[in-house]
Length: 335
Image (cartoon, rainbow, N blue to C red; front, side, top):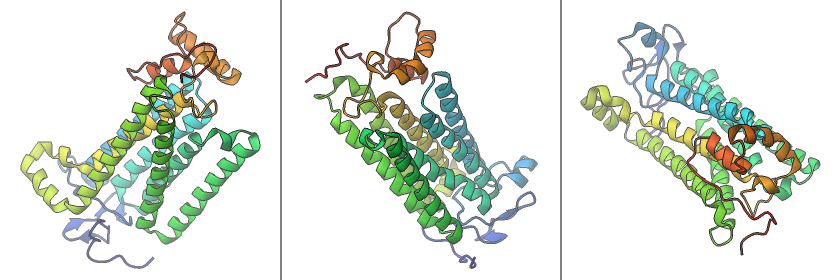
């Protein structure tokens, strides 16, 4: 790998040797930084009063926010297992756990091998959620499900191989961004097809699309504001003292992006494209035998005797104050 430039790219803070522009790029615990990226948070200084942090954590607030992301994903995965969700949805939340733990390791160390443990799960999570929101027609048979899943797996392997060979951060960011845009477009198409006049009971799920999209856009904006205005933000952090964590914008990127992934997972819980991608929200009375068998016991345990739909229970279990009206038993869609 060729030597990195002495000055950072205008939009990327790049690690380079033991010190860069007067900022530490090594520690007694991790050694010299080898990552292709460094971020605006001052290295090995956010908890300088604690000697263990000073030697082992490069970017304290980025580590804390990454661990919060992992906990949110773990909560989703555990909840998913407890209410019997499909394995693909649990895998989506598990990928959020992997991203959070990898991100914490990367921001603590500034080592490239741990940077990859942050970034590759981000690509994997995109692929898992793209599979989850794939149209019903694409996954109508076992052969088609295998083709869609295999295609996404091959794409993940190809992008990962190119990235690991080139260490090109811009290539990774473009790849991840493209996957995120595809997810947003797919969810937007679903929301349009299930607009109010066609499917009034899908309103809570449409709100999930809006919240997830807004969270990701705000997260992306904060990340880029920090990249462009890092030195100004550092001056503000010095001015506010103990409240400087409020201006650690990359940490806010972690939290808001995790929130977007959480709501995306909840959307997949609610709409289940396997049943009816146009109708969207499927009440328990019309769900398939596979779904009913998986959710019936959990539904009774969560709301005994209530007769609520499985997806109303899913909303409640995931902490959302949203109600999904149950469609008529004859299954006819409102015109």
